[in-house]
Image (cartoon, rainbow, N blue to C red; front, side, top):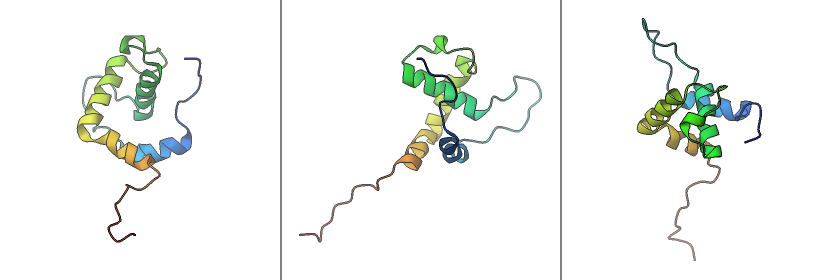
Length: 99
């Protein structure tokens, strides 16, 4: 994949950022929180390239971080909310009064 720079435009990120879960309160010990945008771009790189998680370039967060957020966001319905935010057309409705 010969693309450099961010995978998301600023406009896309502004639309997505409020839909992602907030970082947990700073806890004692453990690894520091990785920014959602960096993780999302790592996930998008994997989805676009079809590569294995272990092949995620080093410019992205660790593959396990990206995979865990992908899983967590799926369980929370975040991906569906993102899809809905970008869907431009309204849901198709059937007109029962139309001729």
